[in-house]
Length: 243
Image (cartoon, rainbow, N blue to C red; front, side):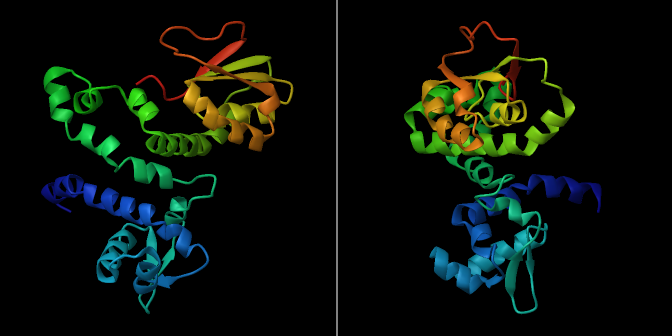
């Protein structure tokens, strides 16, 4: 590949991310988890235009997310399986929210940020991201799901890399729905935890903590870490919150 073509490939890479958004939004990976289907079958289930859906699936097959058999039926690959909903390493919520307006529009104003230093999200929406999420619960739920899925992909590496056994009380600052601290508490059954985040986020964290069986050892405290954080703990963790 020439240098010019390599640059062009980067320039047009949004076509792939937008195609991934389409199949994630339509739930195509969930529809293929039990076996291959044709684009006509998938279009009927998702109320889509079959020829256009076929072209999108062919495009994503070219980058390894799906495979097309000789009969024109598509099946999941190992990569494509990550777009399923109910799996531990799901990327479906991330694929959706990162191509929704809440992400896409601010990135479209990156030049404004570079020229002025002004936050692009605030420039577009006249408020910060988390204020926006507080006013848009459906988007907030999708955002939380994306963050939880991301935590699930790294929590095993965190647990393998760091020995938390000397810590009696751990605070997760801006811990979202609590998937990381839940995994830590589950591995260390004598540890107490505090999940610190904004009140609406903590409400959505309760089911996950209960599912991990650690809700009775994880206190939920609402607040703004730019102002203060809970005191009296042995250690504090922050993951992907210093923007």
